[in-house]
Image (tube, rainbow over all chains, first blue to last red; front, side, top):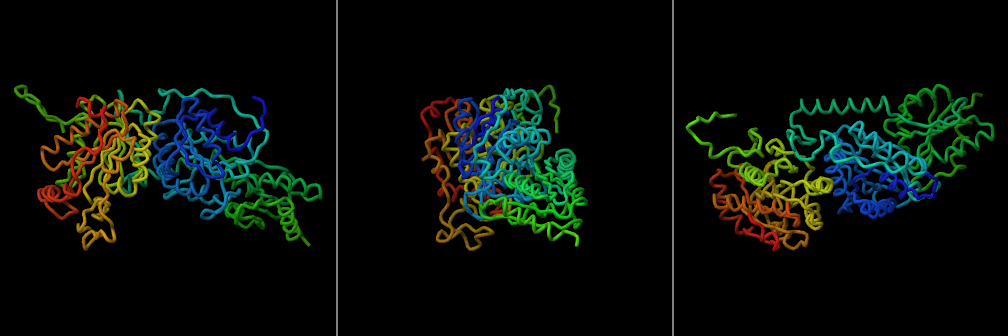
Length: 356
Length: 260
């Protein structure tokens, strides 16, 4: 496949199609609506399932149904819609079925605005619904990674029978850049659906899918099973990228759009002789805590930058446990931090952590 | 429990294959058991057990998946029609039905049921109306009768502050995607027989791809009505049927022509 100029929202939608998306259920919301529009044509042309639901509540519960039927299923939304989807997300987590949810984040709280934001970090990594669970959360920093992470999200969701989220933002959804799409994968055949799927009890005992267990002993056992799965994900699926960390004395930690901006900050700083490195988490859950803890022993200080008031910051602080100073620079409400702003914060960290 | 039949006797009445032999948790006098059995008999008679996927609601029948011997899912409160949409769209050759009470369907789930019906989803809904929230302890439902006392309308439902009962089957009759909407009652033997015919017609409508079908079933809740099972049947006949008239509110010609 050759590189093409692709818009983030259409690119991830087409990537999903090529990675074998069998059913999409969604509800229009800016800044991700192009994905729904794109799939309303593409899925129908291919004879696959597309439904524009009556609400995000409807959409996520349609996803839940299709997930129980054992097909590759996805929805996409933005903050206000994601809040509504939390109900179904919790049921999906409690029922041990796989599904992919893309959140093209916008400014909040409330109706907020439609500009890029990372303010759903807590929502996606820590409180995606009632009960004890964490979805896998992947954070792309550009259109190519958005495409690649759709495939990864499906694979991980199905491998672990879990939810996989993509934490994109309005700028990645709306930007156009050169990227390569994967080749078209063949669709899974109906007879290849997993054994646990609801497909009608033909020639086999009937089974059911539920998130309910009225006995506390039973529900605790079920929760321990779910926790064991999360432990395996923590052990095996942490992903991040490092830039210039070998000799770094200062470390930037940022993901997604801000991670990309921070790479420019690192290059600027290096030109000026500052030994700065960047760690860009690609999985926000599980979080690269161990690697950050290691780097905390090496560097004089860490600067976290996000398009929120400091959410991943708390995970970095938990990883660092006071071994080195952790500072924060964020922009709110749909504002994107500029290179010079982050660089200024970095210079302040440098000045504040130099030995006399 | 399996009972051995002596050779001199003939088996004339048995457990439908579409029900498991698990004892239900339903209260004495509750009509969920009757309605479960009617659905199971219909699915057996149509030979659809191995093709059917059911969706249980939140409410007293939340554990219906233990009692039906077929693939089943358990939905979030009110969302069964959305979940059924997801299941049916990716299993278009299967029969999909939701089993929902009046709190689940007529309050928290109105959005999902109305839009599933509007899309003309090829699913069937069995809507059990007993005018109360049973599982949570007898609170006022959207279908609670004016003046009816419940744990959250202790002075009786006052239409000035709580409105009048919601008439789902009449609402369904206005929706183009609906092929069949009917209200029946399992309050006596004749009603039970009519309800079974209606359920059969609804499943056949789905099987033939004619549109969305819904059977509302007037039911009782002796426990939360504070009545004996017998009194509850009489109360429902004397009061509920006046509020919720029985019969079809919509039946398209193709459904009327079905041989039931």
